Each structure stands twice: as structure tokens, then as C-alpha cells.
Image (tube, rainbow, N blue to C red):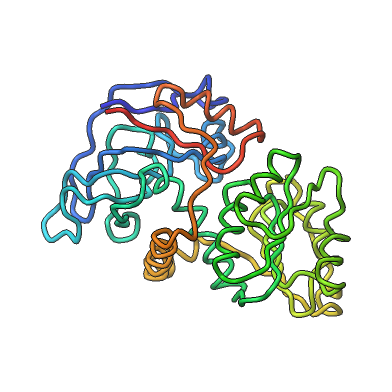
Length: 329
């Protein structure tokens, strides 16, 4: 079968090569999946460069999110051949390949017949993370104000949709007219172009000076610092990540005086400790998808042969939503 392999650590164009490799062998507790679509993530670039916290031995195949069809199952499996699924294959044998093996207990989830494979591949990490953040960590309530930073990004776009589905008023920030238009199309009630507008002042104006009840921040840096100026009493500032580069610090006395919480969101750790919680979230997400309340934002689809170009585009940070690789087996 074909698979993209990182043969040496470098930028994706130099690191990746298509190789002929052995199809994965069936093991107890795992299923074999014929891959239909793979979602790309920024950490795939870091893996190629050797800059990610996980450093699998060379050569390895990146790709953490796939969708496809189950083609082989072990005895007493809860899956059947022909099941449509999304899955998270494990390094060093990731999802940029014709077939993957994945642990059925905590890495494979059935999807409805109505779900397109590209939507399924784009659904897993971003929507799981965001549902966990908003409902488990922030305990968001109907009628609250949710401020979403980087609203046109993968997790940001999920936060806009899930925030609206929860009954919140959603204020989204994004950079430039293309990305702000994307946020409006996703359903944000108020959209702020952070390149030309001050989101602190606009959030205060939109909330009559009260501030946002929940702030969803995958950016960090200056964005986090400014967010502390427009958070409401009893607000929850969700720390999703640090795409802006700088890891910020917050004075504890400020959280005390304004009575807000800084809330960490580590979905991967939650997944390891409470796999049954991930199953529950998956079921909730499938219900929302079938009800038409959420749909992954996909920037573009790429053929299998164009993976390095797609990762280069993703690394430019000029894209929005998710980038999908369609496999043509």
C-alpha cells in the first residue's frame, strides 16, 4: 500500500516521501480501516520538523485524524466489516496511508450514513476539544456571551458553531475580511476584525460593559492579556493553546479582583483518563451534526500526492478551517 513517510526531519516538502509499505496486520483489540479522508493539523508540520513533543522514530507516517470503512475486525469486536468510522491512528503509523490500524476501544467511533467522509475526518480533534472546553470546563449556559478568538480556525470555527448550538451569544475575532466573513457565515452574532478593531472595546459595548462570560482562546500572547480586560464577573477564560507564540502569564490578584477563572483545556489528557467521556461527547456531536447544527469548516481538499503542498499552505497560516486529504485507492 502507499503511505507518506517522514524519512528525515525537515520542512514537509523535504521530509516526506511516498513509500510502498506493508498493509497493517490485524491485532487483538484493533481494527483495520480503509482510509477515505485524512485531516491535516499544524502539529503534522512540527512532526516533520522534529519540533513536536512527540518524536516517533524515523521513518514514520503522520496523520492523526482519518475517516473510512472498517475492512478487518478481530474476534468479539464491537465493529463489523463495512462500518463507517472516524479514527485516530497512532504514531509511527499515522493516517496518511491507504490503510490504518486503530484501537477500537478508544480511537475508533462510528459515524452516521448521512456524514460525508471529509466531514468525519475534520470532526474529531477540533470538535471534541471544543465541546469538552465549553460544556465540561466552562459549563456554558444558554444566554451567556461567548468570545471566540481565531474564529475562522479549526477549533475557533467549531467553537462558534457549538456556542450557537448551546444558546450563547457568540462574538468572534478574526484577521481580515475573508476570515471575518467566514465567521459570519458560521453564525457568529458579532464579528471583529482584530487587524483594524479593538476587540476589548467592542466586547464591552456589546455587553453593556459587563464583558464576556466565556472566552475561548487558542491564541495566547497579547490576545490572552487583552481578554482579561473584557471578561465578566464569574467569567471563564479557556486556555486552548498558544498559536500566537508567547505563553502568557496572569497576575493572580487580577483574577481575584475581577472574580474570574483561568481554565486549562487539555482534551488529550481527559481522553486518556476518561475514555467513556469521549464516547459521550462523540454521541452528542453526531446528534448535533444530524440535526444540522454543526458542520466542519473545510478550506480545501487535496489529492494524496499533494500532501507536502497542503502542509505548506497550512503552515502559511493563510488558510481557515481544516485541510483534508482525499485518498483515491
